[in-house]
Image (tube, rainbow, N blue to C red; front, side, top):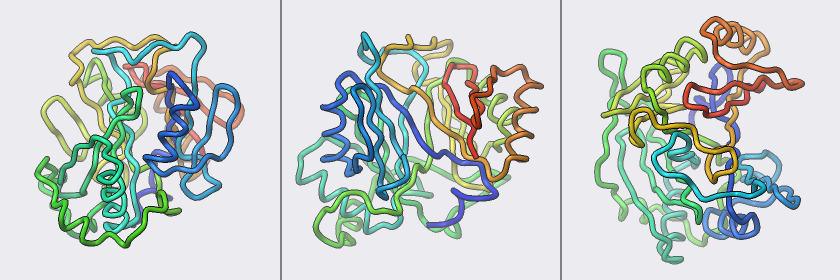
Length: 281
């Protein structure tokens, strides 16, 4: 695993999603995804890969309603595995459980896709070495090709033991209603660079990663923000290397008129589609 998710880069740290049935979802994320339960209360559960760092938090809102179609919000959050053999272990596990999945080779990475019981999208992937990525005119080449499943399975190291401790949140992909407004927020506000385009989608990152955040209008241009009590994204965090780096971004967000509030040691903002973001150090 390379150095795209640490200083001096800005990267996704934790994702918080809303679910309809907390206990049922905890069971899914433990048994199918392979996360460990860190702590749980009546309406909230914190999950981890290394036994100590929160990676994914599940919340069951009061009067929760199902995931709403044709709205902004989560397309998927993406769990990054340390090496290809780990992806082989995970793929073998999914095949044995019979859980439905999709797959793709994106040139920069190899990925598996599935939905949780509520329709929240999940990607589990491994990166190819960045030395193998192809850049042209400042953009990294990505595509959606058939995955070499047999090659990945051949690298599996055996019995499924859950996600390895080096697993991190690799990126997040979001539905938005206005691609240009969202792009302006993430470039002029957050300070990400555009690194790739796809039909009705933009990929953004810091430190020349293939993407820390992606945005799309695949739910339709003008897709509205979903109700607060609906299944889907609650918030995700962006981790900053220093207090100074975060303060710079806070000023940039103020300059573009983005919503911003200070909650203790955390700033909270949201992109133009209403996707809530915690700015943490």
